[in-house]
Each structure stands twice: as C-alpha cells, then as structure tokens.
Length: 37
Image (tube, rainbow, N blue to C red):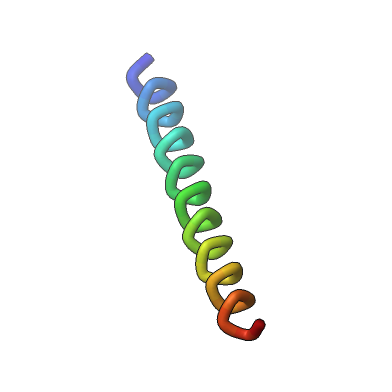
C-alpha cells in the first residue's frame, strides 16, 4: 500500500522536476536566440 503511494509521489515529483528543467531550458534558448538577432 505505502509502497505504491510513495512510487506515485516520486513519479509526480520527477515529472514536475523534468517539466521545470525543460521550461528553464526553453527560456534560456529563446533568450540566446533573442541576443543573436
């Protein structure tokens, strides 16, 4: 029971973490592109 809940929480945290990293990377990429132009 608790093992499944822990796994679900861990998976959702991982998803949020990956999403935020991707968001930051997108921001950095667009900032770099804006500087080039």
